[in-house]
Image 1: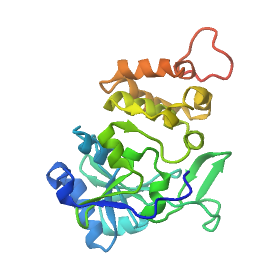
Image 2: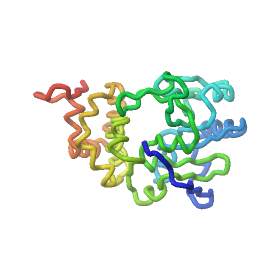
Image 3: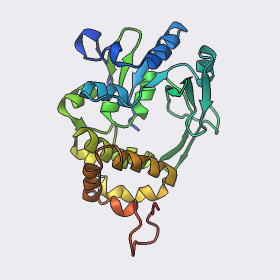
Length: 267
């Protein structure tokens, strides 16, 4: 992951960005305001913010906060905690769920062996909590690292995400090869976002994709299946498949006659 952020974050006030509360679901606003009124930071982040800025309807809204999962549960009676690999709070509104994550920090060994676990360079458990400045270092692409702060309705940009939104560019935060090794699913996520949103993958982010495809064989099939559903069955399947072929990733995802041993087959 990147080792440091720029000296100052770029704060874009409400008057200078297009996101309106009217575009955010009532359930997500309820959670944002509830956390804020309880004295916690509360921000939208990730795909919901990105899609609103690019003019796409968001699929969902993810919230991050400095409240720990147990503290989120104290604020919302309709909250359930889930996950071991990533501890999350789910706030239920009938069939709708708003997912709340605590800011992730950098493991330093002080919180116990059960809080974070890496195998080689790959992160397999991540429940070390930190600040928003820590959290941005754990995110994948700059366009997914824009924080909409309910306290003043501003956007907070630490890594040039607004510039890349305007340029329609997909750029990894930090050194790309290292970030792909931390979580090989990012190889597929790069392909999916480029295909879905019509983005150009910047050269340094693009360069390692083809040579690191073999890392997909280390990913649990359930995670690969979920990502493939998003790649192929969400309205941009042809573009996604063309990029998978371009980067040589198809052979690591589908069973083919005569495939070399060790290559993953989803059946």
